Image (cartoon, rainbow, N blue to C red):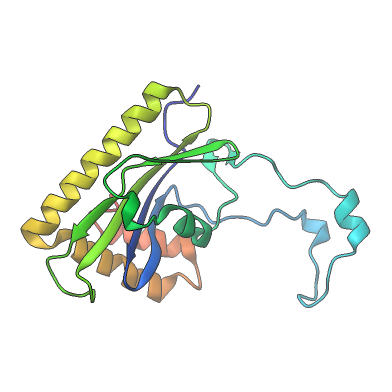
Length: 193
């Protein structure tokens, strides 16, 4: 069984809402429809018989060792937890993927947010069948990363600066090309590295 994570995901939640800031690897999702079945008119509906007799949706969210089948919006909704779940182990299993993290609540040094509080969640996506010891190691790593981010935010406003940079890159690039947005974030943000 593989001990490497399928994906590493960074999610934030503050008074402005939930946001997936970064995910690695960040390949652009291809359509799950076969190339011959694409509809030419986006306003048409597929024939019901075709849906019932066609191939079923993939039951696995792992393809070639990578996380698939989750949009960034879905991951943001799943992984940006409420403040009541902060500073404790977070584990969520969806199909054949287990998301493991330790959400951390930060007191922001800069007051870019109305409340001055931000939840940061460094999440590792693992195979659902990963052993207990592997899950424990990734939870511990996420917890330690949260401690470091809390310290760096208090020391110099590092998390505020990095999340603001990631958000501005998303606003500039994401609607046209999500892959380019994540690539730009990887180049510009030390937190993504």
